[in-house]
Length: 315
Image (cartoon, rainbow, N blue to C red; front, side, top):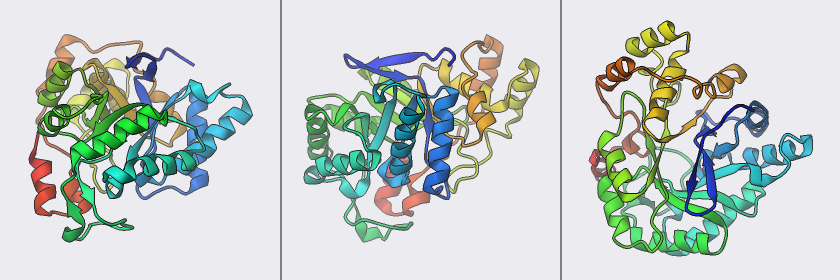
């Protein structure tokens, strides 16, 4: 395994700065996902990102067991595992049962990081999207965060954080939190650079993790803007790199960690090859001047309801 930089969350929670995402669209079958994750462990990944909503907790758990059996890792402690509280569990009394369910799916005693998936609550479990408007209500962030803090105090997770939170939502959370969020996982790439949010998080001591660093091409919420970006392509050709590597390197140089998803063995390894070179100032400036547009919206997944659109509009 090559060099893998990491960041320490809190006192002892060490998170590798590049991780493998497991959200696939359409969802992969258990065996396909499991085999891809085992291959990723073999390639050197030690950070894996899942969520109840992705339906990938079970294959990740099976892959961890298989990696231990094969001797690819000696202990579960060698891995950093993130999962997320889904919106249908967004109630104080449901947070601890939800992480217990995730741990059961993962066949683990603890996760390293537990995140609130979206700052919204669904009043019913859903099996398809978009969601009827009357199932979507505001999340009581204070009480749900109390549940997240309890998960950490009980030892079910080493650290807690959020995903898809705007500056406004983070402000609301920080005003009531006893344990501040360690991480905010958000969409970030050269075409949605999250500059304002990153500056806010840095000021508040919250680490940012980037998902969809390559634009989530091939999903219903992503597109090909990154992989077909002329500026990134020109830099890649000049440097003998792939467009994906240039994008990932730029994201990494912004001081954030990365969750990137590929089940392709070659691309999996290529995505790790971003630490032994750097972008020039001129290259970075070119990337920084790219036009900005948000790619992932809740409305594209849950439906264009008023509350959803209001949250999507927040920075």
